[in-house]
Amino acid sequence: MVGSNLTSRKNPMTTPIDGIAPHGGQLINRIATTAEKEEFLQQADRLPRVQLDERATSDLVMIAIGGFSPLKGFMEQSDYEKVVEDMRLSNGLPWSIPITLSVSEEVAEPLKEGSWIRLDDENGRFIGVLELTQKYRYNKAHEAINVYKTDDLKHPGVKVLYEGGAINLAGPVWLLERESHPYFPDYQIDPIKSRQLFKEKNWATIVGFQTRNPIHRAHEYIQKCALEIVDGLFLHPLVGVTKSDDVPADVRMRCYEIMLDKYFPHDRVILAINPSAMRYAGPREAIFHALIRKNYGCTHFIVGRDHAGVGDYYGTYDAQYIFDEFSPAELGITPMKFEHAFYCKRSQQMATTKTSPSLPEERIHLSGTKVREMLRRGELPPPEFSRPEVAAELIRAMLGQAD
Image 1: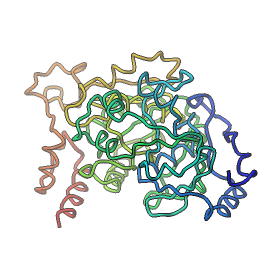
Image 2: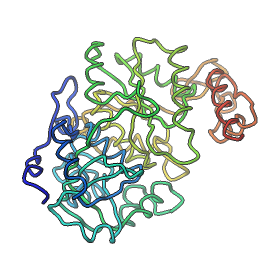
Image 3: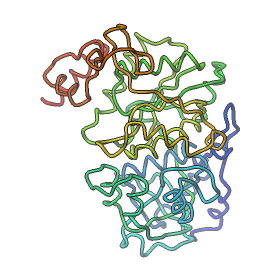
């Protein structure tokens, strides 16, 4: 131990709740107070260090701001194993994705359980503290098959898993300071703030929308269908780590700004960034994304075609079926399940197979791959697929990347 004063911080800080209860009942706050930060800084040079990668850094932030409530830190073995096996924490609460800090055996060996660990970001900057309560080995193959449904190294989530260290470090964490986002400070709305905004707008029902892709007409259609039912839309694009070939976050954010300015009611939508990292875990990540939005104060969550999927690893609607494995009461957020939307030539509007009588040849749907090829050639996709202003922004970005 590094000091008796530090050991007094074992009780988690929590935040008063407005609206829907966070997962587990309390909105966790693991951001150090001014006095705590000063004490941590005084101890900094005497603490053993662990350097986090970009994903672990975003996990630390999400834990600290309450986005991963009820987690107070990186998972101990009992929670980790229960999540991998049963999609539940050891207390039975639903949770579908392991939140762990993996390090090499060389890094883990000198670290002592019961000690305090300095956490540095990928640039070597001191950003947090871990109270190391446990270090344990884990089975990567078992986690891959259970969480990602594959052990194929071509899967981006599996690749990250296998590249990680052999030992998990566990215990409560503290973030030294909640800093403004370097690129999107105006859209940094943490759970405590989003809940306040919903209350100020008198929104009793709020639907969250997760995306790592630029918004297109099918997204717009299902978002507006949802807005017919609830009071407000929380448009929450993920800006944490994604695949290298995904559209960059700054480009996606400009597309969302264009859409909100021209095509959505300004008083019924809030755009905010989701700082967490993508796992590409398909069905399990759909549950994970829903619980995150519950912590932000959403009452509903949109689940569309192949949510959080990649390649052909998951069935088209597996991410919807998985919600049937939990009772509505224990999840505490209502999924809004949408089929694949397309432009129907016969009815001349966006539709799904639930609402359109059209034949397949009367439907306009372009794959993401085909659209990217068109954009790289400087060609606008048809307006039935993408709003022209959004397509123009994507063309500028893609041509700029090619230069």
